[in-house]
Image 1: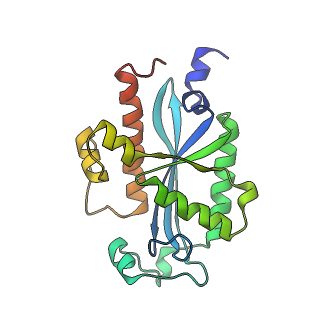
Image 2: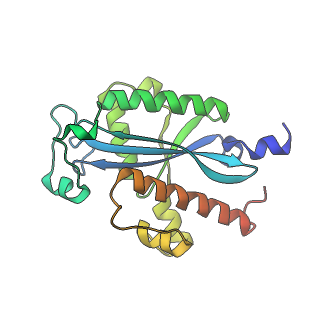
Length: 209
C-alpha cells in the first residue's frame, strides 16, 4: 500500500476504527425507558491525510412501545411527537438503515468497528446501545461496545471549553443557538468541530502524516 492510499483510509488514522459523528434528541435522560426521537449521523472521510465530512443520515424516530415521554424534554428539544409531518419511522427501521450503511463503509475503509463521535458521547452511545439491545440486533452491531470519541473532553483539553456552542466559537466555527438542539444541526456542528480539532493537531505537528 503506498502512502497516498494510506492517507485516504480512516483505518490508518484511527487504528482500525471508523469514526461516525452522532447526535440524538430523546424523550428524557434514561436510555432504558426514554425514547430516541431524532438521530443524525455524519460519516467522515480522509482526503490525502485531512479529515472531512462525508455523508449525512437523518431520521425522525417513533417512540418505542411503552417508552416514557418527558414533557420537559419535549419542551427543550421542541419536538412534537404527535404530528405526522415528522415522517417518523420505527427504531428498528432506523437501525437497519444505519447498520447497512456503516457496515458498507467499514469494509471500504478497511476498519474493524465504528466508533461514535459526539459531544457528551456517553449519552448518545448509551441510548444507541440500549436501542440495539431492545431490538435484539447485537450480533450485527457495527459500533464498538464501549470506545467513544468525546468532543467535550477533547475541547476541554485543547480549547478550555466544554459547551458545544462555546467550543465552536473558540475554534472559529459559526454556531446559531436558534438552531441548536436539532439533531441534524448539532451533528453538523460536532462533525465540523471534530474535523477541525483533528486537522489542527496535524498542523501543529502532533501527527506527522
